[in-house]
Each structure stands twice: as C-alpha cells, then as structure tokens.
Amino acid sequence: MKTSNKILLGAFITALLLWGGLYAAVYIKYKTGDFNLEYSKEWDKRVFQLHNVDYVFLENVVHISLYSSDSASLQLAKRKDENFKVKFVQRGDSLFISAPAHSNEFEGIVQLHINPNARVRATNSGLSLNYDNDSTFIPSFFLELDSSSVYARPHSAQGKVYYNRLQITARNNSEISLSEVEASGAEISLENSRLNLHNCTIGHLDLKNDRSSQVSFSGSSISRQQK
Image (cartoon, rainbow, N blue to C red; front, side):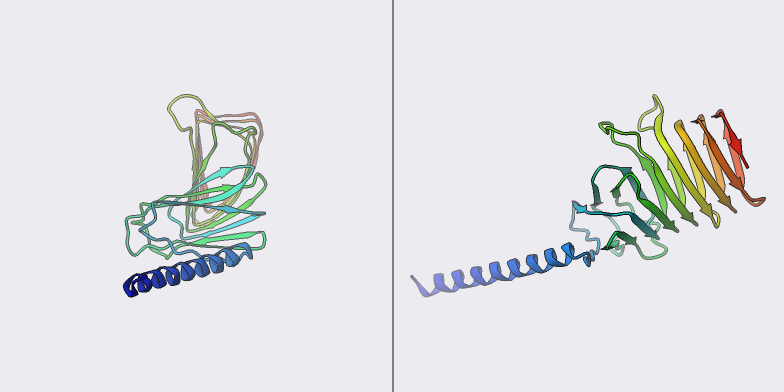
C-alpha cells in the first residue's frame, strides 16, 4: 500500500474513533438524565425520546406546542435567529426547558409530547394545547402559568377540540384563551390574569378569580360554575 493511502486510511480510522467516542459520551449522559442541548441552526428537525416525565418546567420559551401522549418526546425544528438558544435537561422525573430572556424574534418550533398526568409549570412562556387525530384517549392537561399564556382551538375551521379535564392556575398577568373547546370539566384559578372562553362547552367549571382578573364567556355553555 502506498504511503499516501496509508496516511488517508489512518486519518479516516482516527476520525471514526473520535466520532464513536463522542457519540458514546453523549448517549451515556442522555441515558443518565444529564443531557443538555443547545439549539443549532444547522438542525432541520430533531426528535428526542423521553422517559418517565411527570413534571415539566418552562422558562422564557416563546412558543411550545403541548400534546398529551402515551409516550413522551421533544421535537426541535430549525430556527432563523442565529443568536437564539433553547436548552433542555431531564433530571429524574422532571424536564427543564429554557431559553434566554427577550427572545421574542424566535420563529422555530418546540413540540412536546407529555404523559397524560404530567404537570407543566410555565414562566414567561407561551403554550398551545394540541391533540393527535389518531389518539385513542381524550387528553387532559394540568398547567401552572406565571406571566405566561395558553390557548387551545381546533386545527381546522370545522368541529371542536375535546378534552377530558383542564386544570389551570394562572397568575401575574397570565392569559387563558380557549376557543371551540369542549371539556368534561375544568378547574381554573386566576390571580391578576385573564380568561377568555369563546364557543366553549364545559360540563363543570370550578372558577376562582380575584378582583384584578378578567373573565369573558362569549357564546359558551357552562352547566355549572363556582367562584
């Protein structure tokens, strides 16, 4: 074998070994629940499978789509802002997702599938409640909002979106906006926050709000309401 070929072969083997070592290190950190990721503009779409996530903590995430699912996963899509970074880490049964403050120019997508009974706490973030058309169960969501917003509406102009139970606590100028939603029951607590229900049907609504909060029911049907 020529010397030049030996050099090329040696360089290739070295690169392969380095890549394999890096992959192994990242995989070990991921499996042990100590894996951090910085969002990269080179990524078109990446999906990460998650395990045993009971609690989700969001901070400064401009928009995240939530799905209730049998299996938990996180999907990150390509972004346009070169300076924007999203990080996530799972520690035990808790998942932390964060972004730098004042990142309103972010145009990427963060999509999170969570277990049916998982609790989500959002600070300075925007959430949308979604559903899978082929889902075998009616989803429920348990949310705590702090200076954050959440909205839900059907994917198309026809029909309604169905939920089993919605439990939402909102404080510090948060906002809840539900449109064309039908739910078996909802427990909503407002502290200096806003609730907007448009063409919603809720079997039982337990609502608690202070004087600094605003509540709007437009074209909605509520069978029972408590304050």
